[in-house]
Image (tube, rainbow, N blue to C red):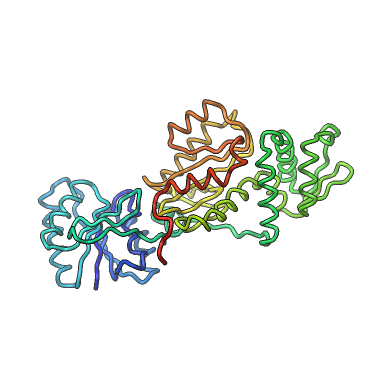
Length: 388
C-alpha cells in the first residue's frame, strides 16, 4: 500500500491533484489537521472516496508548540511504518511551523517528499534528489474544485442542438467583431428581451423610434435567419425562452464558452469547462447563490469568466470586486478571473481591474477573442500535451 500524507490549509488543492494522476500510485491519503478542520477534511475525503482512495484524518493540536506537534507527528509516523509499504509526504500545504515539523519527522524516516510547484504544476522531489520532476495530469473537475472550497454547484444542460450551437457561435462572432458599431442596437435588443422576462412573455412590440434603428434591424434579421425569432409589423417574437435569454446577453456567454471549447483542441491543459454554473455556498444558516457565466479548469487552476453586455457606469466597481471575491472564495490562491465586456470600459475600471489582478477583454478586442482567450488560458502554465 502506498500512502500519501499532507497537511490541510486554506488552499489544499495541491493535496488532491496528484492523487487523481493515473501515473502517481496512491492507495490511501492521510490528511493532517486540527479538530477545527474536520469539515474541510470531509470535503476533501468526499472527492477521493468516490475514486476508491482510502482516506484518514489525523488530528494534531491547534497550538504553536513545535515540540508537541512533532511528538504527535512521530506517533503518526510509527503508525504508518506498520501499516504502509511506502509513504510519500506532500509538502505543498500547511502552516510553516506544522510543515517544517512534518518535514523533519518524515525526512528522518527516509520517506519520499515532494511538492507541487504552483505555476508549472510539476511534482518536484525534495527527497530523494535523484527522482525526475513530472507534470501532474489535469484531472480535477469543476465540481471537485468547488467542493474543496465549501461550495456545491449545478452545471447547466445546454438545450441547444449542436448544429444550432455552431450557428450561434458564428452569430456571436459576427456581433462581437462589430461590437463598437452594434453597441446601441444590442443595448436596445437587451432591453426588449428584458421586457419580455419581466412580463413573462416571448412577444414584445417595438416603438416607432425603435423600428427605425438600423443596427437593431440588422440584429433582428440575424435572429430571424438563425430561427431564434420572428419580426413582423413591429412585433418581435422569440421562438422559446432560450432564444430570449440569448438575446438578453447570453449570446456573449455562449460565444466565450464556445471559444474555450475550440481552444481546448489546441490547449489540452483545459480539462473541464461549463456555461452558466450555479454555485451555492453556506454562510451561517443561509445558502448564497452565485452564477459563474463561464468556468473552466486549466492546468488544475480554476478560471472564472464574467461576461458583461451592459455598460458599467453605475456598477463597475461592484462587478469587479464581486469577481475578485468569487475568484478568491471559490478558487484559492492559484485561481484566475477575467471580465469580457461588450461595452467600452472607463479608464477607472481598467485601472481597478489591474489592481485586483483581473484580466480584461474589451469591445475593441472582441474581434480577436480566440487569440486573447488562448493567450490568457495558456498563461495558466503547464505542458501543452498531457499524457492520458
